[in-house]
Length: 499
Image (tube, rainbow, N blue to C red):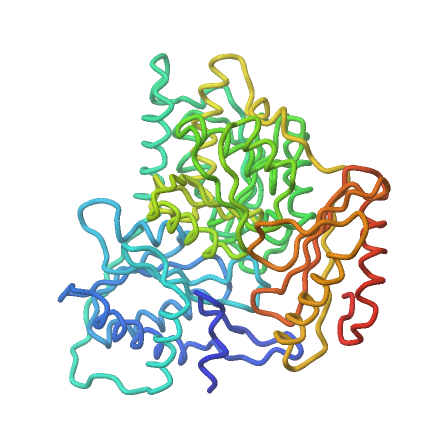
């Protein structure tokens, strides 16, 4: 067993079900038992608590219950008290460590986010936040050594439907923050808000959050958990998924649509006209709310955000835009680092829909992001205004496209590094192109030629032998013109193939 193959950055992920050609099973209940024991052993070295307790939840994946039961068995055999939270969201499992008087030492979510039905994985939390890459490496090292303490008595396992506590937390937050005196208990009354959970774990948001606040949720779709994901991929970045919720908003004449990924750590919304508010638009909208509360704050985003977003944050909202690296942990950790250095940063957000706020433990929480926007929606609605008015001045690119180049080399990291270094030198001599600085990932180039009017970013993937290429342009045909000129510069690299 190659335990290191289970590591995916700061998560554990693997193939949990057979049936997909070429994908070998490597995340079985037997593996989960060992992971449970390993996590407890890791906790003993990193926690000062003598009485260790772990809360465990799962999303709707078919393999979730079997892996959860096995993982819990491993935790219990290793001597930790266990709370079985059943169907849950990833943010809720973190909140088991900080919300209320009776908290867990750690929370674990069994999920593989938006990956295909046959995959699954584990996300780990303590009160200090999500575990980092080095922590996952340490847990897998323990699993590989397979040496555990003997003679421990199995601890108790207690049922804890924590999603109810978490929902109440969101409801109380929206009521108190909106603080609409004429209708404190139901600040969303008069609004029709529909939810698309994609058959993941987010269906609770309609019945346990929106309805108690007075919203009409008629027309919400795919709320029932189904790990086969029969309707569409539960992913706010997926075009079919976004089209589905956009169509539903128009069909149901709703005021707002909300879509979550499988485990509810990401989200996006749709306005009353059926227009998607995701990626740059979603960042702009939550930035408008945050900068009203914290003027001048730095908004940390990933590397592929648009020039129009920078202009909106800095010129229109009078904040600061710090464009950093891809990877939600990178973005979050950078925002935390800035705060530690004395630079106020209240929001870290990726274009994927991962959004973490300083006020909420820097937890990437799709439901909390929506809750914060709902507070703004409630107050604007009371004044006869709409959410989309917040981003009226945001300049969207005329064209936007992402491409992916495969690297056909075993040492793909070295090959990609050479491509970027060579391209940097070529761009410096290229008429109409200008290297953007500061830039923290890959090479970002501003293209000022009359037939281009845009920018591109070429970078290495975080984990795979792939170089993603993002291009945006303010004119029709600009993306194609930029790509054509860049392709000529990359033609000599025979191991670089457009997917």
